[in-house]
Amino acid sequence: MAKISVSDLTFTYEGSADPVLENVTFHLDTDWKLGLIGRNGKGKTTLLNLFLGKYEYSGSISGTEHVDYFPYPVTNADLTKTASELIPQWKPQAEEWQVLIQMNQIKMDSDCLYRPFGTLSFGERTRVMLAVLFAMENEFLLIDEPTNHLDRDARELVKAYLKTKKGFILVSHDRDLLDAVCDHVLVLNKKTVSVQAGNFTSWWENKEKADAFARAENEKHLKEIKKLKTAADRSARWAQKSESTKIGFDPVKENDRSISTRSFIGAKTKKMQSRVKSFEFRMDREIEEKEGLLQDIETVTDLKINPLFFHKEVLIRANDLSLGYENAEQALFEDLRFEIKRGGRYVLLGGNGSGKSSLIKAILQRTPVKPADTGNLIVNGTLDVASGIVVSYVSQDTSHLKGSLHAYCEEQNIDETLFLALLRRLDFGREQFAKEMQDYSEGQKKKVLIAHSLLTPAHLYIWDEPLNYIDVFSRMQIEKMILSFQPTMLLVEHDVRFQEKVATQTVILDPHHSAPALPR
Image (cartoon, rainbow, N blue to C red):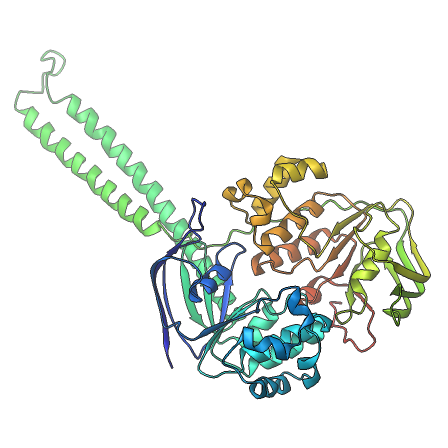
């Protein structure tokens, strides 16, 4: 068991006034299965890159001599190469036989190693990279969001594989994955960094208890400070009033008082002033004990959405529907039947490449929200979309987000003040508003799209993998909003916990794909 020690680590990106990490100190063991948790933009990926030695920083990091990082970089030219050809540039010290052993453990056919990388599905690419990553022993591995864009079945394979491993940091917002594979968590809180034994659920339960205790202690200190302040003010007024009578008196009106009374009044005033100082000292102590109590509490503000009411019960109806692309050897799916009814929340299920996003594009073609690229999509059978329906769409693609938020609001014709206020509720710092959107983290870009959708009153909300890169706090925030307002939704989302909480129906495109248990 080796140690990794981080001491007084501070890092700021060039051109930024705000540090991403500031005076961070923690220690961890290299045989832990460590989950890295934190809000979008808190520096999770940055921390991994600092472990890799990519950036200059102040402070110290020791014990990271043998680390490796997932995902490996893949260029357009690499897509034409086989994974076997890519192993030397990804992990030069690894032998192919070592990778093949790992591929067997992660339930992969060996021929995936010899096919052009670009022909592999997202799930296959992820599993090949993980097989290469774990090919060597005595390394500490940095795994950055391995389940993004993976379907449910691929996630299950990755989860089962990682459960058998140790000696890694896993950055993920997938609560099911964190619970299944982690035995420790490293949490980038709002102000501090903490390390705890356990998985996501045990950490979350401890956090809720700690937050409740901190709020109670804060309230107790506030009451005590208020009581002490009132007593100090009263004593100060008494002392001031008493002091004002010490010198000078009217012998006619105050015939019971003599010059010797002055010393008595002075002693009384001094005693009162001493009492004021005692109150002030106790107040300072209460304030000092109160400081920091709420610094790491995540204040999640409720979100709102304004769904429109549609006069018809059925918004979308498909009958004997098949979908495919021109020149493709076979259809994505055939003979699909389903209905999207008012008030339901429907999750599209199917493996990667089963046609989920293509079905969404086919639906959008029949609405004013035209998809950017349908790629010669061929639709056979019946796909009826109710006339006059208003749709709010969140794409899984964020590559078009560039420029300032101000320009984006003007281009999309949305109220900038309301938009920025909603981003604040989604934990955007005000300093983010001055940045260009291309400099945002992927999670922050997703929040821009979600905020736009929430501000768009619609009969139907179509969200295509909305939670990719979104932090766990915002996921729970979005879940609560959906359950509160119950908009009609069509979703592609592979987060098992999210499906279990919000879905009322499933539409299965792949007959071999297992449907989750839904709430009654």
